[in-house]
Length: 296
Image 1: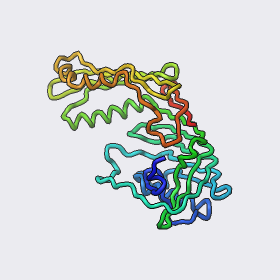
Image 2: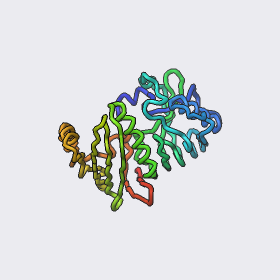
Image 3: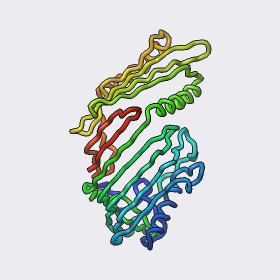
Image 4: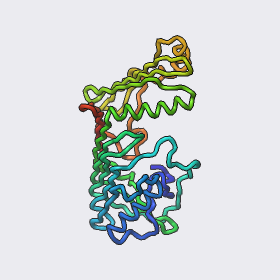
């Protein structure tokens, strides 16, 4: 465990819930969670009342029977929208008292949530979620994952991405990026395919325009997931163009692109201490890309 975690609590891994002690009722707990999240996340265009929101229920205090966050209809701002120009450092405080607790059932769902114009369906279900109620030296209350007991956590998730909407969203994002570099986008297409639940391949094809010149470029990538080591390996990555001018320009970045071929990435590297991804599968079901997995 990070030694600073034993003396400090901060917003990078804990939710501040106002002045202690523990909320007196389920409704008060849900209200405090709402206030904390609304303070950190950009407000939806239609206001927070447009989002189903969150519910929470105590069992034998300090344990919780359940907590649910429903983000259906929430739109995640992209491209700097809704973000402050200066990002403040996470607030931290000295720990005064720690009380272990357990959340019997926790759920996060969105059906759908909008990300860059793409409607994503998300479901995350967890059981036996170990947490800590932390009271800092000023009497403020926080809640955070208890990393020392995180091995007891059991959870599964499912994410569905509609490929057609993802294509439109990616084209819009690419058009904006190219416009900033004074390029136009004449045509764009891409596709994703999953095989055997552990292999994902995709290609992107675009025609770029600058003044009266136009050229086509094509990128291709393949990734293989190792279910034993929970790692992802880039087995193929290429960018090319038959246009000699654009092909020459791509030479400058081709060596950097090739450096990623064969590289493996540990899917658990950025997980909180004690939390491990133990199962992952990808599938293209009809017009959707479906990613599912388990934590344990």
